Length: 81
Image (cartoon, rainbow, N blue to C red; front, side):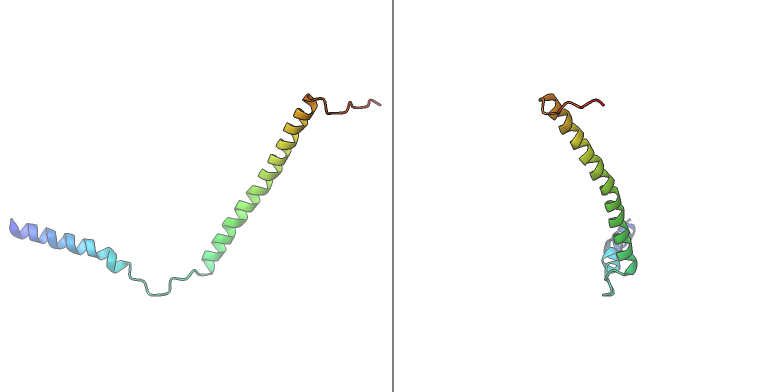
């Protein structure tokens, strides 16, 4: 029974130390061209989603303030032709 426990303890010690050995880098950890292309593509997606959102937000604010302006009587009456 003691030999089985020793074997299990040895395996657990080696298994616990293996991530430390795997984490040793080679020193070449800089980002490549694909990383920069991916980040640029992600930035383009954010920008192209933000532009219509800002236009929609501006339109919403314009309508909200136009309704409020009409309620306080600041709007001129429209002329009929």
